Length: 126
Image (tube, helix red, strand yellow):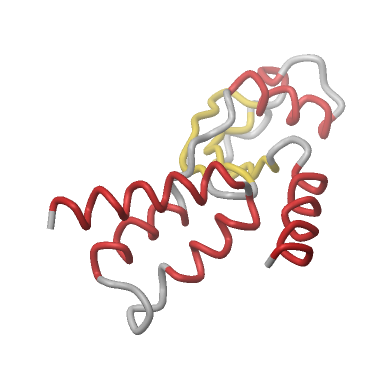
C-alpha cells in the first residue's frame, strides 16, 4: 500500500508539473473508479482543489489589473485564499463599500498560452 501511495503521489506531481491540460486529464481520471485504483483516485482528487497556488503577490497583481485599481485594499476589506486548482484559484473576500462576502476567481497568469501549448503537444505526440 505504501508503494502504491507513493506512486500515486508521483503521478499527481508529474501531472501538475506537466501543465494545466495534464492536470485536467488527471481531474477527469479522479472521477473514474472503473479506471484507476482507490489509492490513485484519492490522490488525483487533490487536483480538483488542492493544486499548488500561484503566489499571492502574483494573484493580487492579476486582481489589480482586472479591476484597474492601484491597491486591492481599495475594494476588499478581507481577502484570503480558499482553493487552488488547475486553471486558477479562489479567494474569499469582503467588499469594503458594503461588507458583502464575495468569491474572487483568479485565472493563473499566461493560462491561455500554457493550455494551448499543452494541447499542441498532446496532438503532436499523443
